[in-house]
Image (cartoon, rainbow, N blue to C red; front, side, top):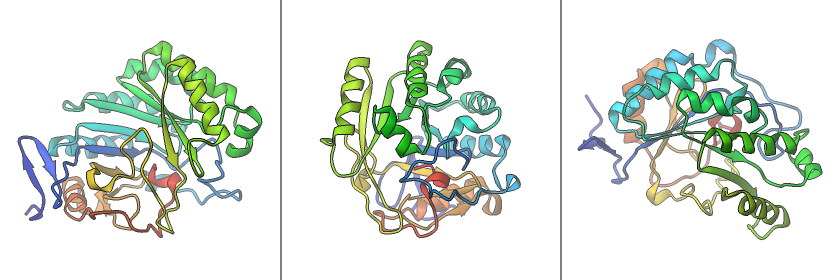
Length: 278
């Protein structure tokens, strides 16, 4: 029996607060090739066991079920999605699901020069690229070793491949007026890119605010669910609720997540950005 609060009208899915739920973020891995200071501890992380990470077939079936329920927007995330072996095959598999209108990926851009054209050829429509500064030294410090010039090349390759619009995710500590954020803004203006300022968040304390230039952080209109790399459907980033697709089945896990989606975020004591997907 489907949960009493869940309802679907004219191919649309709503939660108990009458918010249309049409967006699924899919974390394909908890691995990453950077160690950003606000995302991962310097000492590293305890990685998921390979057998605990969903296979591509499992991910495909979850997304297929979600689209059948009313999801029309899908974004692949990580960790860093491009570090997962043969991720292009997963992109191609999901592209075959009819009903997805907005198909994107969030990446740090380090590997994008190599993958941009294959991603486009496999059906991906656009990319969001994380970049908090244009200064090579500061970028290396923030990411603990990243090369900003590889990101620049990745952005250029994404544009040539037609992965547009290209959106830049810029994390800010206090405001978009910070020097690093302003340097990213100038870079975006020169290169025809869209910018989104993301206030630095804290899952355990429950600190978050609205994304400037995007819809994130606006609880009143939140339309998303999240699938973690180990198969948990999360109805809210700032909440410990999660529903296992392996234990409950894909449809039941999705419906329970929609049915129990909270009105607003609170705190998340269990998850981390690198394994939820942000």
